[in-house]
Image (tube, rainbow, N blue to C red; front, side, top):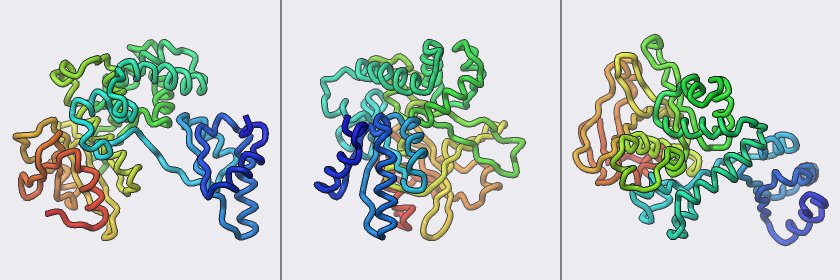
Length: 351
């Protein structure tokens, strides 16, 4: 109430007592943003240290609107997702990664039912907070589209097909997906483009940004049938994608991600353009739900011709040891993927 009714008093008290103030769910107290702007501008005019304020919120659309409205040119942005495989460490295994995802509460309180927890999350945040705030009126169709999107994680996006099954137009699905992407629930991965454009895939691939939420929306309520199902492979590919996203956003790594696919069937799950101290380098990443018996993957011939700088592929597996499968291919357990990417981008050499 004070943040909304008297933000000057709130900030005066907070900044006097601490060098840093954290304002959680600040978007719901819009009156605080002009006061933050006033304090930042006053500090700049006096050439003083600007107040350190961390503004957080789960509704990214609403929060971004407030920041753009009052704090343009005064804010830096950081994206935080649910926990990565690397961050979960030994607290989790493959079944946890796919079924519980990266939700901290589900690991701190193991007695919680993931199905109930994620159902509550969908009802309170996805359907109410996101959809209602954005003015989505057809909530039944929205929820149906949400489940259809989750069922297609790791595949080429076809908004028209999803719209037909959900009972709305493909353009509506694309608009809803924009909303979900802004709130870090789904992401589109663009195809790599080269001078072979006529032979390459045009549409992006779709990925959920948390495998636990994706598995829940697909209808899984137990780990055993999930791991034995055809969806285990796409969900593990989704897990690898989310690990790449979290390595980029949580560790501040600089790289761009694509996928590669031709009409003739040549493909590579992920193609990374790395920006390191020695310049630009390229790395291929292939997701394989396996631990033993991982086989070397070669660079697709058309991609080798179009991108001769690509000389190595990492086959990311659910476990096992980091080993070299061939002169150009390395097996990489997902638990150390983020660490190895950080070493590569810092100029470190892998054995």
